[in-house]
Length: 364
Image (cartoon, rainbow, N blue to C red):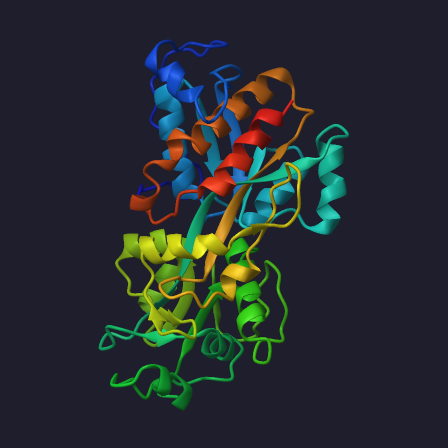
């Protein structure tokens, strides 16, 4: 995975000055293919803030954008989904990165920010969520939605609990207290976890959903990197974090039993689950309905993934900002998807990519 600074990410790009279109030949053709004809216009420096889950994807997109549009770069601050939405609405950044779409009370505020125009949630990448754990003698751990709901709400408190023992036949689970680790900041990853638990274990998870953890047990850690560090430092810990961060840290993560056997988290099993993804509505505000994916029992489908969005103004930007954002999104939706798997993400399936490109081209 790409190594990133803790606060601001910029791509390593060439230093040529940007113009309305400073490319030609093959590079221009590549950008003007599936992703439309955005070109390389607008300002060189774009600002964004939000989701830590997507920060490594943004770094990859940034690198590719800089290759096709020398001099262009996004300065991205990974402060969490909630902070990203707030900073976008306040007009402090050009777009937001978030693992949860705009909340109902934020939609009107976003219209004001966009000079009377709606903001759109545009999914650029999918990220599997891994349940990382610290049990040195347990090399394979299996959980399910019900067990996770009980762990993160405090009903299951010990690793050798009969419910976990039944899921892990033949594995000697230790007589050790479970130490749940959750995101202490406003997090779209938390929101997706709690939605998953609500769908898969409604009897055991009655706490609700949202970007703030509501389970009531465990210790909080700041941002995705903080969750990984806390799990590594705490014997008996379990936490949730995007697969790319788990891969980068070399920490083990659990398999999920969806009802048809245990499913490991791999690029292939995550991709298989995407067949169940649906759109919440028609139009160019591309909020996704992930409930069918969460509940899938399809063999070989890993069910817990988040969609990570860019929140942008559908129109209402100044011309230089509009051209730059449209260029960045166009590259990210097309050539930027190529190397995502190696960084722990899942590239967009065709049915999502097609609507995303339509929405980007519809921006004004």
